[in-house]
Image (tube, rainbow, N blue to C red; front, side, top):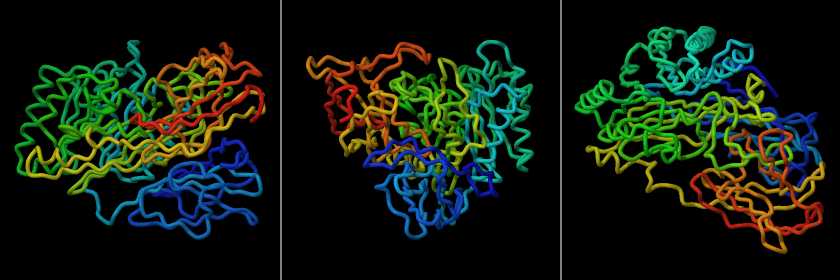
Length: 556
């Protein structure tokens, strides 16, 4: 059920169709005329615990989850109001007989009584070049979500790629971004909130940005500058040209800041569009190894970057080694590593873009910095339609806005020396997750209503997040591979959706291309096959493999 933001602490609810087939581990097909549970308390940021009462029509029952997954018949039965005492997503469905409502989900950010010293948002890859009704609607939803979390932030950072320029000299498009930001900030009464912008590879030149953004981007030549917000330093750099005078400036300022008596206990925020080498997401799409070297001497640095569009659900979006690096997601679309197939209707497509918009909310306290991963749009959609960018993110205001892409990251600077601070880092290579997902149930082969062979997989569980499923299908007689799934590639678990599915129907067919009429590679009806399914998490940890033997075209 779509609804408007109701006050400063409300976040949009989700009414995502539960795209789950009838199965003994799940709920039956979605009944759109059966209302979802009503939440007594909308999501948002709360000081201390909050209590949520769920209501549904008489003669029904409510099942719920607290992990962001779609509730099933095996999920907890709602009996009494739920106390939310830590940051989480609460999802619920209504059940009546074999019918199930769409799911409702809310994101609750629970904080202590301590007030932050600084509260700000970091987003990137806005990629907005049109004042169309759609773009205005998208950004109205995004700013409503931002204001619902913090109605009066100290700062908004837009970290590069404000526009879509692809060497076409479309610099005037920056006027579009400035207009959209101004309209929404004025509407919400935060027009005086400082905005910091960095230069990205799709932004044309520094002089072009300075022309349109003024004090939001004050350096028309070098693209680098410094701001003090509250009592904290922000150093904005141009990662397209990190060398020469800019590099000397950053090194000098970091050295000067590090000479202060409280330097090791106080974060210095460095803002740059491109990820720096060897840090977040194992260095994917990174550059500027010189920047990594220059930041390495300063463990109090927190470096925010975008560019890659890689999703924030992945724990590799935070890295700590000699300093802290954080991926800030993307507000246009996000990506997975280039090793995933997605479910597109009756087939698997080899595709890595996903239609989510994500950004960070950051709160700075005296002894720590807390970073929340916020979904601004996490719909059940795909980016491509018949080989072209589709109409995703059209259903604004987004019903998934304000849900959480993962647990809070907490950056602490503890120690009297640089080495001691680094020794207390939590998100290091040595601390990487090694716990494998658990795939409890054996997948089931079914023939769907369209006569297609599918594998029905009950979602695996993991201590962090299941990334996808390694699916290998072979001819039972010869052992030869029956579907040409790339080596190492997985079928996406759709972890990016809010709520994420508790069951996947994985088509046993591959569309050889992004067009809907591209050749469809399928199994031979009447032939016998063996399918092996292994759940894989973000770090590559693998579950026990489950195997099913079946005849194509015949239900088990």
